[in-house]
Amino acid sequence: MSDELRAEVALGCRILGREDQGDFVWGHVSARDPQGRGVWMKASTLGFEEIGPDNVILVGWDGEVLEGEGRRHAEFPIHTELMRARKDVTSVVHTHAPWAVAFASTEQPLRPLSHEGTLFVPPDVARFTKTGDLILTRELGEDLAAAVGDRNAAFMVHHGIVTCGPDVTTSVMTAVLLERACRTQLRAIAGGGPKTWSSDEEALAKRDHCYPPQLLRQAWDYLARRLDAER
Ligand SMILES: [Zn+2]
Image (cartoon, rainbow, N blue to C red; front, side):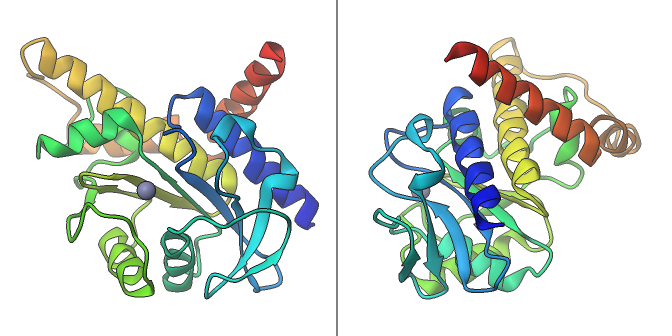
């Protein structure tokens, strides 16, 4: 079971690397340990595209490395505290997604200009603004989890993004789609600013039509095949 999870977390890392969400060796993907011991998480000092199953380690709820070789990331409380707060969350992603960081600094609401935005709005994306610094303590992890609330994502303003879901596929694809939604809106801003977007009603219908679990899985499988083809 843990072998499967480690492989899934590792593949999620490589997908995020290929989607330009890596920031040298920073950013991470995690999955809840089925035995409740903590989270299986990417090890530090490596870039997303370098991660294989052996680079995914079990980090306990207080940050101790319980299994696997490698150092843990200092920002592990992003993962442990979101999962402690949300029983429905089984996987968390944190990246320094460059388009999302740039977009969040504009303080403009994210609009459903394209399909991607409808996964998040309405209502507008949650924002964590308490600090743009690293999430190094349990307290900051709890504050971040409170900012996410029951949502699937939040901007960590001046820092990055956090996304979560019931499985690794969902949390990773949510991060991929949030970054794309921000890129689309920044392009529209560069073109004079968006004038129209989907109504709330249309956006909510599109969320159901475009991004049910089986379609997120199809997109994930495609991205995995693309990585294989490039090897
Ligand atoms: Zn970070």
